[in-house]
Amino acid sequence: MTSIALVTGGARGIGRAIVDRLLRDGWTVALTHVPGMEAPEPLLADLAGRPATLHPLDLRLPASISACLAEVAARHGGIDALVNNAAVGTATVTAFTESEDQRDGVMLAINAAGTLAMCRGFLAAQGTTGSARKIVNLSSVGGGIATFPGFSLADGMSKSAVAHLTRQLAAELVHHPVDIFAICPGATDTEMFRQSTLNQMSPADRDRFVAGLPKGRLIQPEEIATLVAFLVSPASTVLHGAVIDASMGLGVRPGLISETRH
Image 1 (cartoon, rainbow, N blue to C red):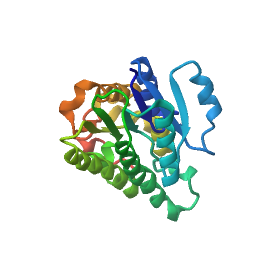
Image 2 (cartoon, rainbow, N blue to C red; image 1 turned 60 degrees about the vertical axis):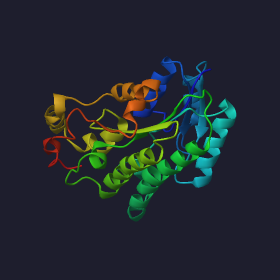
Image 3 (cartoon, helix red, strand yellow; image 1 turned 120 degrees about the horizontal axis):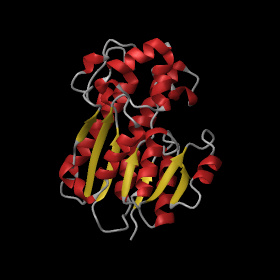
Image 4 (cartoon, rainbow, N blue to C red; image 1 turned 90 degrees about the vertical axis):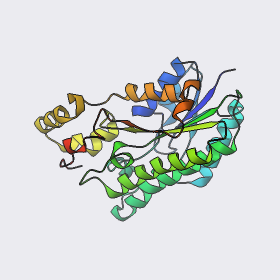
């Protein structure tokens, strides 16, 4: 029987790389888009003929979260893996509100409370294969692993909350057939990172910034997708509860960019 994975925010960046990798690995994938903000037609056309379905999801709204989970479960008979990838950063949160006073609350609602609600809904649902089910939460090196002066307080708080949620649920689920993990990427070549950080720099400053990163380069979304592919596999159970530093060393040496403005 084919396993079913639900990947939130699978339209672009790391999420899209995860969707493509899981499809190549033989999963059936349900991915989400934000209604009214991400047009479903291009995604549906791109995924035509592949074992993938598209579902609306607004992580600010409990009713939308419940409806998404119910729709995916009804469509596929259950959910075997949940990849909580959808999130906003300091730049992309502006698409949800024009008010600076509301941005911190929106960021926490989407990144932290939304992830919590998705985990609870997934745990209340059923799987399709009888094997251990998997939750993979996407956090960040900023907040999830290390602190960086100048980093958005709300952004760091929300990513720290995801890491704590992972550990807490792992402690509660040690005797249950559910494995949970968090991945904390470093500077990754995504539109979110470009908008929040790279686009604020001159070309020369960008070159210097990237050269100063671990290994002198940005992480590629496909590298994070490879980690997710392992974590949703049966072999990952030994890592239950792990909060994985996927920053190429930035988490253990944050001073490389700690004085860089975010």
